[in-house]
Image 1 (cartoon, one colour):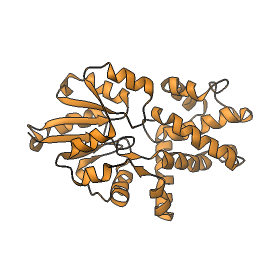
Image 2 (cartoon, helix red, strand yellow):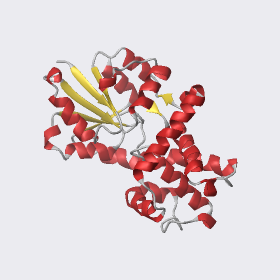
Image 3 (cartoon, helix red, strand yellow):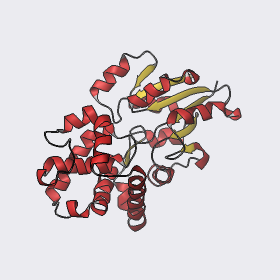
Length: 268
């Protein structure tokens, strides 16, 4: 029986944390120039370092912008506008991001769609001006480009990243072309809905279905949908998740913990 793999992009195929953090700092300077103009390279480097720790909480790219500003409020008390930043630590953000996010959105009078558009625009401008450094701020995990090139399984990308960025990285950095109709990016609906669409496609009937993700919360959303009981679920332990999440995943019968070397072998 043939295999179909629906793959998350960031944290499964590509480590984009360097690029997304730098893009978020660039976008923050556009969105809040008064706050970010005085920021020196020492604080900027500190913010980017902390963003690597916080990457597991990010579901959609614009959240990087919020995290960058929140880190600045933690580091520079004089600019605080949110009710949550006093006494907040990086560990506190990791534990409570889902509760913190709506509070700071309101405290800062921010709009999700505007932040999504700005984050995409800043990335587009960086790509247009200097594609080489934009590409270079990303990396594919070891063995992934070859695994995709020589995969005998049918591959779909299911991501909250904007499709054009995933496509550019696959082509330019991995040397892989995946047809546009097999890349489901930001704006194609929640991942659970994309999986439902895929399993209904006439040409995919009878295939064994696999979904590889690095966010435990996303896999738990799939488990809540009886309609998706036919999917084999995997948490990539090399991606943006915490030890605590990996331990929890190991206790859920439906989820298989996957190591990078095993993943590359499965695709082939």
